[in-house]
Length: 202
Image (cartoon, rainbow, N blue to C red; front, side, top):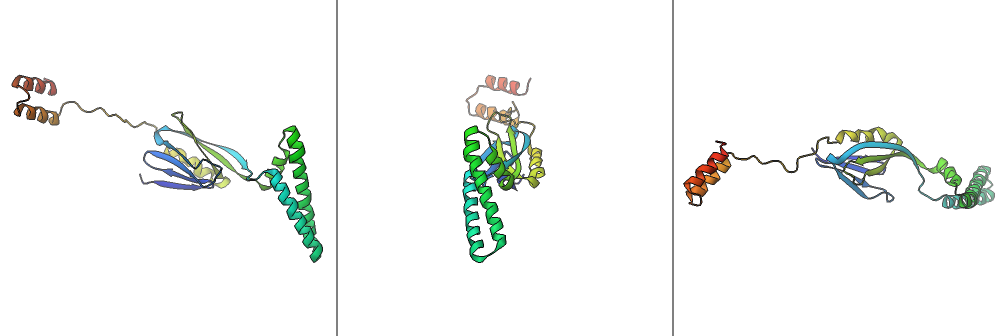
């Protein structure tokens, strides 16, 4: 088969005759993952939310953004900017305190969940199982890419290729070989006859 490349939100899957691989476009995911197609197991998915920034960083940015908007609103006398600025400041203060005091002391994730609700990417975590016990291929897809990701199951090879095929015993090639040895005097007539009978199953 021709090499098939399937793009997803976090990178691309590459399928060849013998391998299935994932090349990441995101620094948080292992850059290259690969397995033999005959080791490929089922394709599983689970929902995920990904927040690419820590809540405290988001809180500080929100506070800064709110202060800048409030200053612009006061200087330009724009009521709309002041409302957005105050909302950003309130969000920043709430998130900062949740992350620093509540989550920090109690080990909860309220700050993270609040930020994730508004700012996280939502999608699916896809796992292509490795039946040989090696590393699974793990990557992320957008919500609308789930069906395409689940179609990867069709690239499974159910039968393991025979890496050491049994060579046929006998045949015209072997007869020619022993005849050549006989002609050169390496085999006696008796040895030649015996080998010929073995090859012909006589």
